[in-house]
Length: 198
Figure: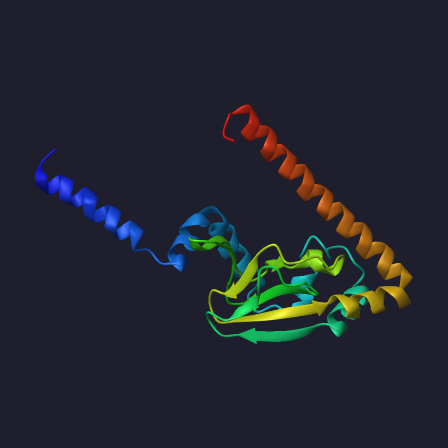
């Protein structure tokens, strides 16, 4: 290898080290990004009601039930770089991305921010806070200026208390969604164990 080639390799390493958290997050979620762009195209120009009806948590709910869900929600706007919530905070809101992008991260002592995913329009997060009051397992930051549709747990609890039919349908969908995620996680763990990638 020539000296020029060695310098080129060192230069490439320096450039990789200089990448920002945002760039690392984008690369770390390259496959998710492709799906995110497809979802963004699918939700463009649609209302919160239409987008909500596409999500696994709400798909199949009666139109009247979806409208009641929309009625208890509100929109939030966050400038790029703003913190939506902190890791360790008690969660009490569900978020649906209408525009922009949100970065889900954890902060590691001595290392700083570790980006886990960048979510695009049509994606949602914070859904576990609808059923428990545990601390957030990660932080959410505005990766780009974003517009979010938000449902508070207390408002959802009040709605489900007075509308038992909606409560039955929604809670069963929530159980099925969590069950699918658990199965997917088990499959991944089995694959990693079988390929000695732990």
